Amino acid sequence: MAEPVNFKDGARSDHIWSFRGYRLSAGEFNNAMIHFYRGEITRSNIWRSRLDATTNWAVVSTGAALSFAFSEPSHSHIMIPLITLLITLFCYIEARRYQYYELWAYRVRLMETDFFAAMLAPPFQPSETWATRLVDNLLHPKFTISFWEAFGRRFRRNYQFIFMLMAIAWFMKIYIHPSPAATTEIYLERIAIGAVSGPMVLFIGLLINGIIFGIGYLTAGLRKSQGEVLTELDLSSPLGFLQSAGDVLSGNRAKREELAYVITGRKSAEAISEQLMHRLGVGVTAVDGKGMYTGDDKSVLFVAIHPNQVTHLKNLVRDIDNNAFVIIHHADQVIGRGFHAPS
Image 1 (cartoon, helix red, strand yellow):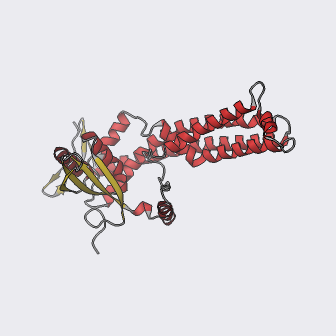
Image 2 (cartoon, rainbow, N blue to C red):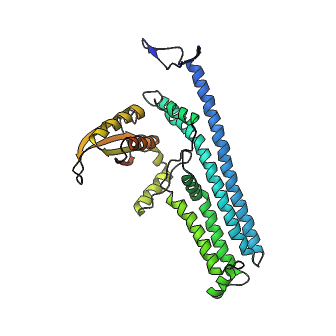
Image 3 (cartoon, rainbow, N blue to C red):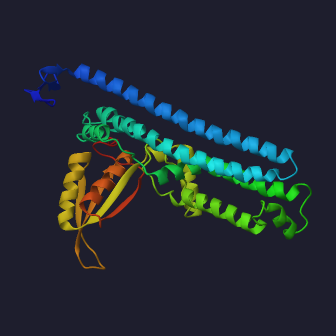
């Protein structure tokens, strides 16, 4: 059976894994992990190139449609909505490919954050849970993000600009060919496609684009992606926009630690604290509180974490107390063990 790493009299054993009489030394284990990491990097790069290929299809199709539409004066505007439907299909295909890409990217990030990075930061040992999560993903592979998050993310990154360009080109084509439309009635008459009236075509076009843009922006809050740098701007206020934009441009966003407040019941606080300390290896400070609306006794947990631990923290809290309040915000600097050393 398998045996973990063990220590005796302060010295490390000469093997870290044994199976059916075969022993794997530390060097052999690290060599195997390096090759596995390189293999997952290759897989993620292949699927990343497939994402780029789908985007290229959409760009080439857009260029061909616009070239044909503006070179032929009569009824060529029909080409633009047809190609728009084709581009929608490309976005669907790319979203599916993005889900597969995120599967490999999750494994790569898991090894980078919980194995390699953990060996560089005190106490210089990998997280106790990274291997369990990696094994679970290998034995029972499943998409790490939903199709809707994948669709929305690829749409916001690439396809929204293509859809905007196609819509503007469609309206301009109908307006200027064969001559500028003098009235709204003439404009709507030109939009008509066969037996479908102009207002109906316009309504269907606005409805389809509205649904696609709605999906793209309503999914902006889904942030389980591992393979993208999540630097979306805060549009809630001018100050938030300027601060987010400054963080993105200066690179400060990636350097910030996170401070989490978990407000939960007294019994749940014990279980949550134990899981956070055991599985994430972070310190937890609890203070007593009271819910002023319900009058119930509460515990407020203060936890300083690295950005890559945010998702794990939220999942741990949700599994134990689905009604807990979790507040996470950026901390300019955290000084202490596992973070910055005191100056």
